[in-house]
Length: 157
Image (cartoon, rainbow, N blue to C red; front, side):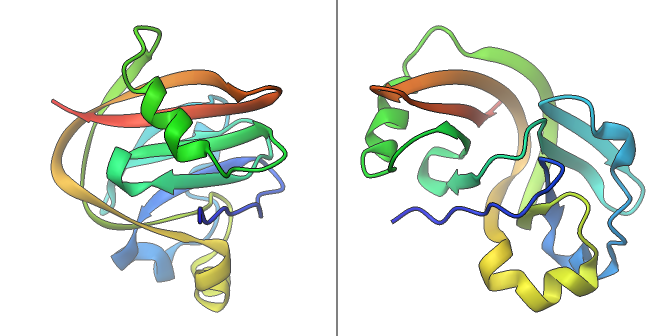
């Protein structure tokens, strides 16, 4: 079963280093809140991946290193198979390169560390990314009749 988080009123999620979640004040990434996917360089945090643009549920498929935002879907029972099929598509769009590595929390971009600590198990997703440089690519898919998802994957380079 896929774990979704759907708590962002603003529609932006940050992939924050787990070791820095408690120190977040919820306003660090205000300058990045204009794109659907962005990279922000923050002193002490390194490069941070921002996903969003619309208040949509989001999840992370670990084995595929792919973030999924749900645009319109009745259920997600065949989501992983649909994402597997999309992996071979030539329609992926390159966004940017980013340096990641370690344990992260995917969480509402504007939530403070104190709030995140109280709701970590329900309102965040733990993500582990092997250390290295990745290309972020995006693809919009219609997985099933009327079920639409935005994918952002990390491709090791």
